[in-house]
Image (cartoon, rainbow, N blue to C red; front, side, top):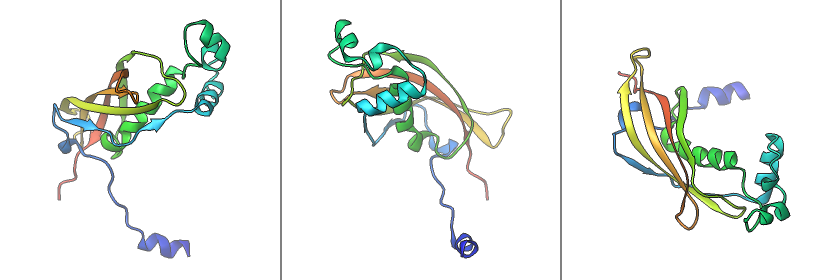
Length: 162
C-alpha cells in the first residue's frame, strides 16, 4: 500500500529560488503568531531560561512590567519562523544572524508579525548551484510597534537549468 502511494506521490517545489530575490524587495509575511503564557513557560523551562521575568508575575511587576515578559529568544524564534515560508523554504544552508536588536518587551497575548527586505544578493563562489541572500527582518506587535530586528543570511538554491 505504501509503495503504491509513493509511486503516485508528486513532490511539489516550495519556497523561492535565488533568481526570485531582488535587492530592495519587501516581503510582508502573511502569518502572525499570538504568544501565550504556556508558550513562554514551556520555552523558558525547556531552554533552562530561569530569569524570573519570564515566569514570575510579581517579580515582573516589581521591575516595571505589567505581567511576565516573553522570553526574548522565543520572540526571535517566532519572528524568524514567520519568515521561513517566503525566504528559505526551498532549502539551503543557514549562514547566520547578525545585528539582532530587541527594541521593546513582548508580553503574553501579544501577536507578532514580520516583514523582511532583501538587502544583499550575490553568487556563491564555493557552491555554483546556489547564491547567498541576506534579508533585514523586522518583527512588530499588534500595535505595529517594532519589537525586534535582525539580518539573516542563507545559501539559496538556484533553479535547475533544463
